[in-house]
Amino acid sequence: MRHLKNPVDPKSPGIQRKSRRYSLKLRPILTLASRQYPRPHPALAALYRTAVIEGISPTGTSRTAVITFKGASLGGSLIESFEWNTLDEVPEREMARILSWAVSEALKEAR
Image 1 (cartoon, rainbow, N blue to C red):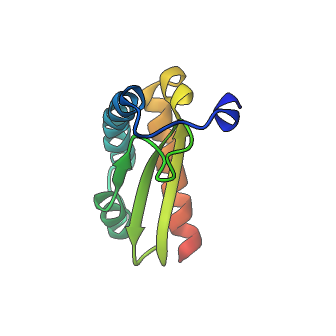
Image 2: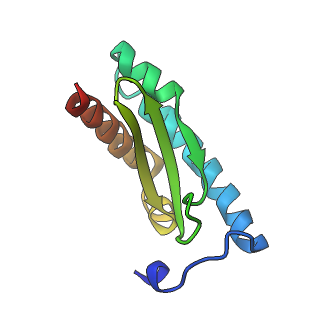
């Protein structure tokens, strides 16, 4: 848990470059996750359309990339966070499977 002990400076050029890199890395993961189900529920499809990707957490204090989903079907928003080192180590398809499961479960719980 090194990143918790050493907060990052989101204004640092190196951190900004990494933030862009991980933001770009999340795009295909989000696309794959949205295609996990051949015929998704309309609420699930709408939720994926609201996704906003950030290469660094909004607080900017940890090495974490974030996807935020907003929708009435959730009754608020859902935030999925991924540590940068996890995005480097886990294959895209596996990350997409995890994301897809998390989003569909959040939608089920909200109903």
